[in-house]
Image 1 (cartoon, rainbow, N blue to C red):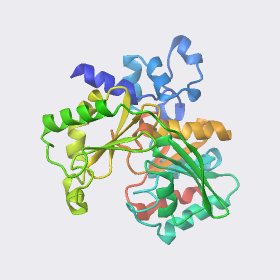
Image 2: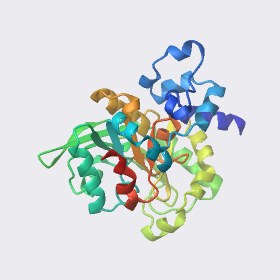
Image 3: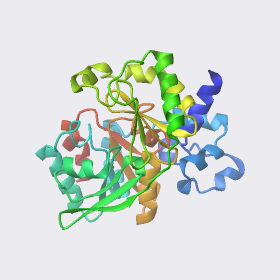
Length: 313
């Protein structure tokens, strides 16, 4: 168990910067000279000692309401790249934007000081459609896809394709089902997406929506086995996705690396980035943002988005 815990932390905990976020908790010695802002998660793993990993794990870069109230002017001047998750943040799950939240994006997009993008776990086209064709850059599938909107039309900019060892995933999924009693399911045990992401739906790919909604609404069932699932899919990034599933990607695909790749390409530094999302718990789609020490706003009620983001107007 100790080995699993250390491995789990080493894979997902990479808070290597930011005095603001970590109270100046920087690596000692020669490592302090390294530009950690440019390292990916796999590279960060190589740098981390057990002591540093624990320190970074304990660091939380969430900007709560009190801190925003105290630092609002500073943050407004500092933040330039504003990154939004979709479901549970800008919209309710799988539903269109409400007018109030569209107005938030409109205000931020109209300010030339900001670049505003969507960073999602889902497919780029699905995000575009759910947002009603809203003209915004989209980084999707944990960074596997990138798209934009030109003259109202969806334009795919990048679509990475990863080779998947189907036999490995099918056999490992069966181990999980046998070990934890999820042997009855409807449809396919594992879904293989075109870009290379893999979804292990515990109720199967064809489970009824009503069954999915009541299966694990607080994610407690999946969080209980999350560390073991990470160990079985060692070398991959594992997320608690949807209402019944785990999403598994190549380890370089996660929202932290997705944001930083976009930031580097467009000339932004890490301290200029602000991420806005709702799922920062261990295994959550936004978890790498928290665990890497990037500044973020935690939205617990998507209808409160205008209130939480008003300090940037």
